[in-house]
Picture (tube, rainbow, N blue to C red):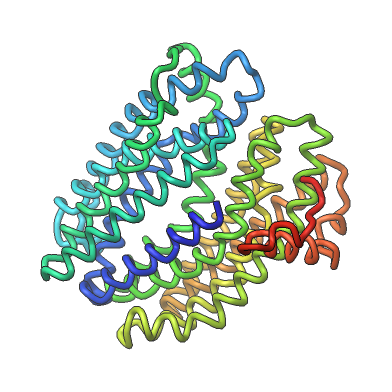
Length: 428
């Protein structure tokens, strides 16, 4: 999975660099604003179906119908959400979001139902332990987008509209792969369970929705206070900072099946042990990002994006904290107590919006980065604290020790050619 993610990261960096150089900061700001509207519709419209699937998955009798329901339910919710987002932007006026026309939102929102369906199907795959399929789907989608963007740029036909069309088309690829391998079709469907899935997800939805808005409300606020150029620069910093979560995210997704399919005691043990590994990986990734950002931005994106570097450095601590807290936050879903998921996210979102409203008028994108990083750290701290409270775990048990570092290094050596027999990793 790490290999697939690394390949996707390289493809994403290349794709992002081509788009950034072709569109320049202002054009990239327009493109990213349209994509943000569509992704907001995706994240608000999925009604936390993935969380509902995970919460209902321990009941083995429901699993077949959960699989069968996943794509039809997602497409229905996605279509409704995409239409709603298009209507909302039409009412408030696309010019207020620095968008030159409503047509850009309409194009971008074509990807909303496809995105929700891909997310539902991918989560089912992870719950079933079919990580290989999820990896291939993600990699093929990244490759399609990268190839299309490169061809368009070479022919000098890459603009905001063609970039958006390519983004939508690439978003349909994972769903196509999931359907082709039978992971999202050919199962029985259950309308009553579909309603239960929506009802269960809705109970949790304020939490994930708040987390998403926590990660993206700053884009809307920055756009309102500044312009497309500043949005283009800041959004690039957010994207680069997000790359540093790759290692911790991989660990979290691989362990999802163990967290939800195991007994309570084993699930807590897995969460505690692997959180220490995730924390080490998050710290290492953040340090690499901070060292590489000055070189990467200059070489890949050009001097027009030089202001991105300090923003990346400001965002890195918050992104590191989120990566380290992924497993405790996932465990809270297992308990099926919505307030444990919702309350920390709402508090962090409120802090983020308040800080952004104070800091953006004074410092622009720098204020955005400071506000977001503080809010990310707060969310990670609240989620980790709740995990320790509900499980009786001591906070010190989540702090990495030397033995954890040795285990990670041994695992890394096992991944090198010819080193499989040379390293020994403890079970689990």
